[in-house]
Length: 329
Image (cartoon, rainbow, N blue to C red; front, side, top):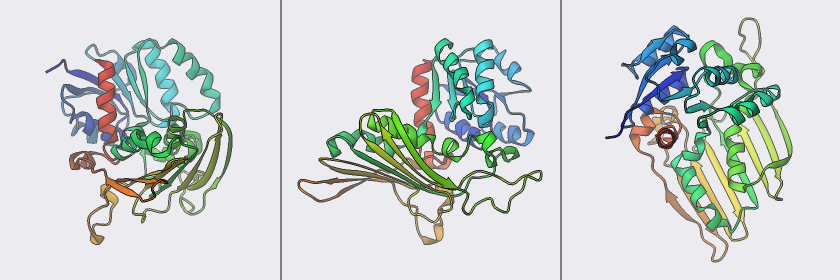
């Protein structure tokens, strides 16, 4: 048994509580302190981290002596402010939810933090750690002979309701292509090993949120988009997003093609949203389709049912924390 790593958690709404449940599955890790200003969410968080101290402010949490690392899961638009306060007051190893910032005007602030923060900082691009996507990443080069074209499709349920409905407005979330799709742009860069040089996109609010109003203001977030990205190494990628397609069998479908063949990953959405009346939920799978000889081969990638119960991201939150703890230790 190793030394127990004590987390301080900032923000315990819907995603924060998923983090708490997954930390609870990790040996030698515990949530020691929580700062969550919404009282209902703070009360709910206590059931997943019963021994944690509930703090009244970020100052109070950062002053606690026994913390080993910090986790930021607050609304997007406060990430940079909290990151700066942490850097000035208690720069511990930090896992911070995506997106790191929501407006281009904050880029210089983040550049300074990157250059000056004295401990590891991990931005939560957790799609990398979903078992089916991890398997896809491991096989991509061999299956394709080097990716030339990459396509990512997400057909999913609409945005859920968050505290104070912050995710209904671009000024708080950064916009749908930042809030929801930064995961996919991260995967593009990771798979293609290059940086974007040209982007073409078209999107809008087609179906969702049109009848909603919050304090007299209508939501301005998009629910659908196409994005094409050209990369410096000559490769290209495409994203297709639809957030009124919760009837889909698979939520994410990723396809990479190269001179040797094609590889696909098919990833189901959260188990809790599956219509049980039509049978059990689908199992994630990876499909390899070589050119020589032709003939697809499918491999199922099951996810531990315990991990499916405690989160909506196919186990990725758990695997991400396990890797983060290796860094902290």
